[in-house]
Image (tube, rainbow, N blue to C red; front, side):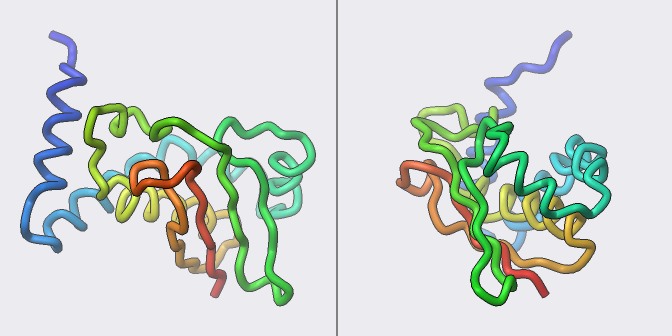
Length: 145
């Protein structure tokens, strides 16, 4: 029997409605780590060449989700501007009422894993705009330690 995708989406909505914030955070952060495992080889293929990674988005327009990257003056923050979207790009967010924890925990963790691997150092991601949270695009600030 194949996995029932609607059932899985409903289950994640149930987890998002759960009152214990720590349990919710644990579930969705783990989901973000698992999602990163599917992208790890791709990120590692850049060999730590941050500029090549940025150029694929800014110059070559190779990302279906990201519009541009910009560093702040001190290069301690990388601002990621997402492309304008009409819904969450994650399949789990393709429901009438997408779980906010997908942004607050899952996507945040996923991006911390991506950019931590790319920069080979700890980063902290702040979701600055997202379709699930009412925005027109999904954008983040990546704080590089």
